[in-house]
Image 1: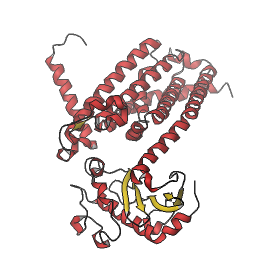
Image 2: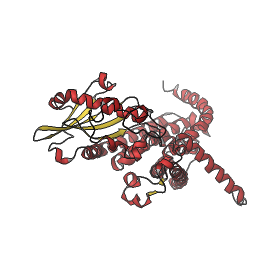
Image 3: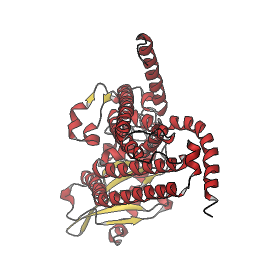
Image 4: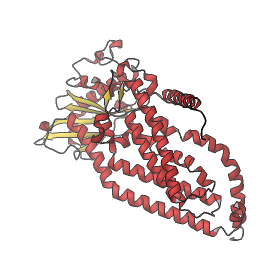
Length: 222
Length: 210
């Protein structure tokens, strides 16, 4: 039995590695789902962004500790386990210490695991990072994620409800109370902004803005 | 390179995956164990805060959270899910009940409510605990005082024919662009009051349930 296993493992990993690429593209879109879903208010977006950054850092550090020369299938399984465990643990901790935030994020909190797996793709492709490199890479990704979530959250909440960081004190803690501002009555808001399509429209505008800014600056590096 | 790795014995990799799984499970179990009490306390505190805003502390001297029972009346409430009831008593005499009915016909799915009724059948207040209504339209009650308008009402004020939204000749305002949600809430509150009128005795004598 033990002699037939290497063959099995080999035949398992090859078709998988081939098929892996296309679903990955699809998966990277799903990676956005929690970002888009929780970005209807600035406070929830900030909370989700911080949790996602934490999750990314922890997942990347643990995966960088895996032995370098590991069959791809084993790496994939190990990374999925690490990502699932990390996000599961974070979910429990948020439930215990930021209960209101936990209730506000709902399903989008466990969905962070998808973003983690998308981000961990280079690790699955067996690029070996030192824990320090992994940590820096994850932090950069997390801060990017946080910035986009926050930009979307602020924009959508202002347009949709006329406020920013509404209920921030309940969701994030009393330190966030001064962030809470109301500009006009919620009934005057443009409701579409806080609905699901509004998330995609806001993301589109953000991408357009990014491209426009890029076209303005002369290409010096990257 | 990758091939060479796959040609070697699979056992070290298998053992490593197994070890990772065990470590992840053990860590999760430890965290779940240490946070369990805190999470339970959070849920209780959250419930108690809502119960306290609905039932003034002067109205009862018992622990509402402990005096809990459930009722099942699918014919009345339109759902087979047991409905929780917290009972308020002062010196053993029933003073109020907080029912947790579910409005089955919300626009985005069931709307979980908290309806506080005083012993004489007037409403002490209504809260929404969980819902899936359209943000910005159907969740108008979250950012307004709409739910406060139930306070002090009973089956006589207004009479049954007026227990609906204004568009249908009722006494209650609906939300701009959304009538399904307020209608569902109003109907369930009325049904709850009717259930309370017909079953209040049984409600307070029923044994405590988990």
